[in-house]
Length: 217
Image (spheres, rainbow, N blue to C red):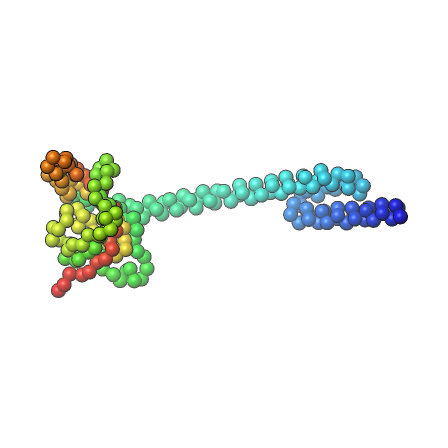
């Protein structure tokens, strides 16, 4: 009985080693050069633990090589994405000193058929307004009340209404407003409470065009 048990264990060991060889050959063919050095089945059985520990290291090296091959492609993809973002965020400067960057533009056929904001149009906008040092002095989003006005009727500062020209509903734009197109030399000052906007201060507006309606004929 003991002899049959030993023989059974030997066949099991041989079968297990054969399966191990097949698996390693499928995933890491180079590993067979290590395993074939062990020709005797008993020695293969005794060194099975050591060899099974070596296989993951071989597989890990293969995965590492694959990762090194993919890494340059990932870097190239990020560089292309960064360049595309720079193109989309190109600063446009007008003759009067007003500058803007389109942060979000609508694409597609329907957007192409729409007319951008023009003089006389009625618009509804949300904005966050900053001083040149980054201090927020007005925020319609926080108030929950967008501003509505007619472009060209001087109902808001010139820099704000001029900065909306060409925008379509849903688009976002960052405006860089020089002091002369903002609150000028007067600023926005409250008696005894200082100035909300100091005189001769350049401003920054982050604007979202909520809605636009053409001027009545």
